[in-house]
Length: 346
Image (cartoon, rainbow, N blue to C red; front, side):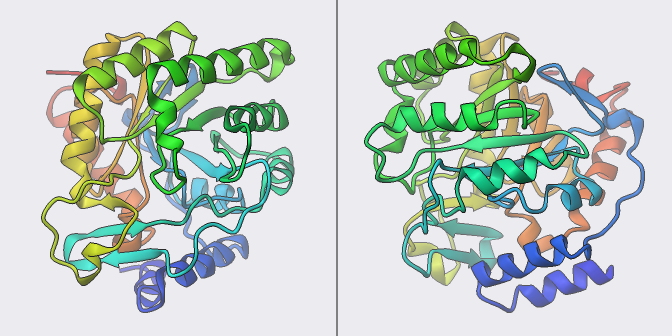
């Protein structure tokens, strides 16, 4: 076990939100790990972006774009920062993040707590050492939530490698209603109009992050809306409000569930989205990934790349290197020459 993993074990003795804040500050201070060079078999393309490896850091870890450089150096192939909202907001009352150690899971009801667009934009403008995405949301009290997404895009235009519209957090009341076809047509129509009016040089792939709590028909409707409005892809999926059988004492807390119990549900929705898209969208698979085998399963279900976050709370920063090593071995064992060849493979 590395010193960084030992430090992560020590942080698990603290309140989870306090531990996370200390981890971010340590990373800013240059105390993060440095991963070895990537195995070339893991390199892939995502909506026109070249990734050194297909294992990314999901939104939620680096809400304010403070640690994307250290996390890229730790071995992630890309990092998604946010969710960021136009105005700073404190989020929901504490406590609002809970570990479920017996289930290798986390429940959170943070509510888009972040410093707002201005510091986020300034940090991205200072330079990106790799592929860094911006996950955009709406303020809880916004009179025009769709307008908040447009504001986010305009302010971050030219500063992010890609954008993700987060319409699926369960912790902002009413936000998930934006996933209906009528609401999506309005949202994506206004977003497309705004993008067309911005300088072409700043254009970047645009993704939509969806919930895992969808039925098959709803997934198909979202896919068709995304295609109709020219999106690059989907991020599948956010946390779930469902509750599979759990053992940890905090299992009754309200909020979105992530971690190991989310893997099967999110992978099923990912496969449904891949079937509906038929190659028309790039998919990022997220939810419950903590091993190379699970990352490989996401690729074969149709993901071009994968993301993780909750597993870091239990496995420490050395996890990403282990996942990549295991994934490379799986790809070679099955005769694939690169990660992209495994996408959707039956």
